[in-house]
Image (tube, rainbow, N blue to C red; front, side):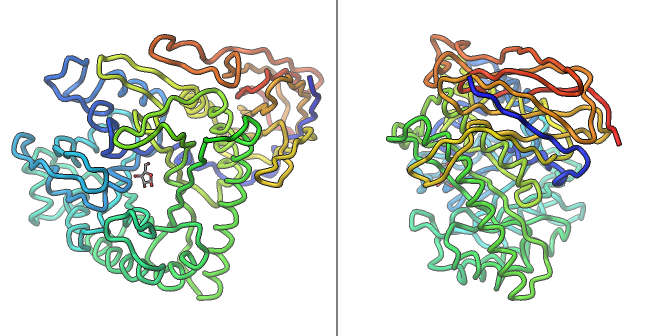
Length: 488
Ligand code: AHR
């Protein structure tokens, strides 16, 4: 057991938490869309109008704020007109990105309807690989226009009188990569392309927010900001942590690495804005992230993650809380069957991974403002990162009315429990309760055979002399919900 003193300051929030940091990503790839999100009305798997019911219900329970679609590498060869209109007349295409058949049964109308059913905002990425700015602008018109013009009328003809009001649009995916259809040789080329797309898309709907392709190459990002900085609102960043050959301690350190990398990219964007006098505010959309194990290979990209991945995942969510001003949008890659948060088998069974349980706990238990939270946690050395990592990771959020305070606590220690004493400035806790995901070992996972091996458990919290006393299990993710009142 190790001891930690934690201090939370409720008088000076770091910023407002944009709940879109809990976003999800679904792609036409493997069995994510077909088999996961969509099974079709004729399927033996229980469904509602073709949407797979168990997955729908599981995603609804996440309180997921935003979903990114349709890709991913897939989008760079996707033509949205293939995916609207009577389903039996939609063309079956060859998807060059992943080498699969694309039946186009699930398209824009299905995606938006599914988002409404799970309570999330749709975020659409347009094809800036082999697609054109005109095609992208027409997609915006189809979704958002109230005019009496062709694509808006087409939406009405297919039964959707009201515009979809899709606010967030991405311009292309990973255009820096040689694997990407229509990749760009450098940031300047991508900037030029981004400008053309943004220009036409905004002519149709000036209210939309645009996410452009960024990466971890500083030259790329500087070019994007320098040449196209007045045209987009967010730079997209993707980070996957390769799970292969990493010890438990190294793996769970990587959220700290991600936090520092995102902050570095953000700072670089701001330097470039200053240098090139860019007036438009630019933040980061961290719209693909996860752990990636070698077994997750095409065509399915399937893997079953365990507690250690959940510890990493909660670490990232805590980091995103701290980065609330810099990274307001994020999307976990991916929601179902591909690098999955949820595994949905063809015979109608479903597995909720420990990572899923983390998203569920956070989605249900989070405040509106992020508070500074510090601890005197002992540290360990990550040799891969050459950094000292605290065993305890903590973030704190407070609701607008100042009464409910959440502590988001990760105990990274693989074998020791943590004993915590939490004190506050500007807040008096009255009572509290705790939820925990820990499993028996760092390798514990949920499987088809044992779907409930890892679950959310309840824990105890004591309030004494305005302090909160609690104990965290080894390798655990915990959220403490406190009821109390602001003090001055
Ligand atoms: O999420 C799987 C793939 O990883 C996405 O299609 C691509 O954008 C990234 O390289």
